[in-house]
Length: 427
Image 1 (cartoon, rainbow, N blue to C red):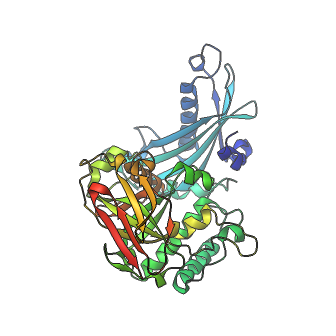
Image 2: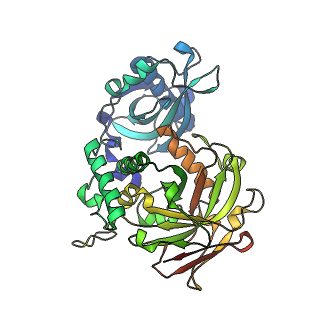
Image 3: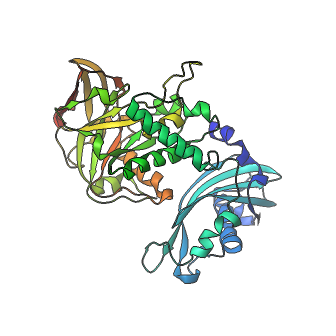
């Protein structure tokens, strides 16, 4: 069993799903060994979704949908756990995890003889065929009915561990820690069952507090893009954070060290968007088409959560980092901006100097194989929340060096070869 399933073992229990449908296997579903073929799994999960739409939601996934709206499958990921057999029947279980104004996230599982044989994770988008675009549409009554009709609390539901008061309290304490330069106790110790989705709820609440004070979102960052870093914190995908207007510092300028608790720096490429990117389905090619400039950058990181608990020595976890706006603290953009097709971005390399000593080196291919893949991942990751990457926004695609701690008096210089250099001094 994979680590992901071990951590989400409740997904293997059919009783944890509010909606179930029985699929009768067909002769055409069988492979030469009388097992269900891959196409059969796609069909049975599709039948389960159709049953959910017609019986529970009252909305068609086909072209004859009421009010001119249809539901389209945007993404699906399937994991095969064991062989299915023919003849027989398969119970398809479904649970809606998150509902947006024009999309929803669905978890499905297939059971045969009371054993889970496959899992599926889907994003469904409600669209207007005439406009060929997403639409919130006039079917709001059915949409609002989902929490009672199909969205009972599922044990693996990432949005159900912390209540709203706990999320707001955590966000306020993180903001106070940033201003007092006194890190708070790890949220992972206060809430041992806290999930990654809970952490993003805290992050969004933290950003909302800053926006209410007049700040604006100017950029976003993607972190943990290397396989080694993901394995170190037991996750299988990157994380992301928000960069506000007061977090930009000039190339060649000074950065006030007293603003931070324990700052560090990383080397990255920044993508400046000329066109918006809205998932799902965004690819690296879409990112390159939508990008006006790619430019060298330094990211400044900080920790408003204790990196190590003084009493137990417990190290902060991924939920602590994500809640803390993915440790975002600042950005320095410089060097030579180039068009995205001006060079092979995978082969861009950098030397990171602190006080004239090389502390780190790296190549941009370390960012998910290509830095544009990080930007595509972010656009798709934001889609279920009805968020997108607007034109003009700067996207830090991910670091290709480890973070290097700095302090007052340090001069940081990142040499990107033909793309120039980025420099700043902490004082």
